[in-house]
Every structure is written in structure tokens, then in C-alpha cells.
Image (tube, rainbow, N blue to C red):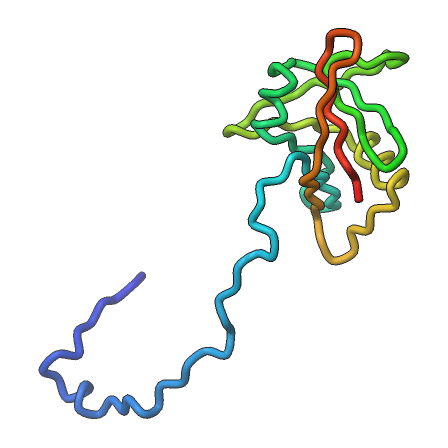
Length: 144
């Protein structure tokens, strides 16, 4: 239970020594990169493994309900339909986020690009190129 007490006009106010106040040592800091990411890989034992796709990416892909992933050099190709690809992942929309819950996919991406999650739970990637392949918009996300 919280108790509110005013020091105004009390003996305690007179006993209060303002010189005993010590500022905290911690400083406010902003994130190094405030740029909006295109894709985030979340790899957490405690909070699960999933992929978060940006609203901008989803709009460029025409808001599909499912997408496919393929690897290409140092990039991931993402589209509703990719050549030589039969596996699709369902996108769940939650609070303006577009999520894919798939521990095997997160593990495969982590292994393929040698992503290090020690001390962190997610990695966000910011670079993409877009192209049309067989009448489908494909996002090529740089994983560097």
C-alpha cells in the first residue's frame, strides 16, 4: 500500500538535507541504430524463436498470408512464391507486427549466416533490394 505524505510545513522538511542527494551514475542512451528494420530474427530460449517482418516489407510483397524463404549468397529471398520452393510459412499479424513462428526456420537462418545471439535475443537487418521474378515481387534481404 502506497502512502503519500507532504513535507510542507512539517518538522521533517526542516530536517531534510538537500546536500545528501546523489545523482545516479547511469546515463540516458539511445539505440545506436534508430533506422526501422526490414526483418528481425528473434532467437530466445525464454521468449521463443520467430521472425518479425516490417509493415513496409509486407506492403511491397502485397501483404501475402504465407511466404517462402530461399538463400542466395549473403541474402535471404522472401516472396509469396519463389521458384523451386514448395515450403510456405504462415504470417501471423499481431498488434501491427507480422510474425512467423518457426524455430526450425530461425535455427536454419542462424546456422546458414553464422548469426551470434550470445548476450542478445534478436538481430535486425535493414538492407533490401526488390525485384520481380515470374510476376512476383521478391525481397532480397542482406544478412551482413
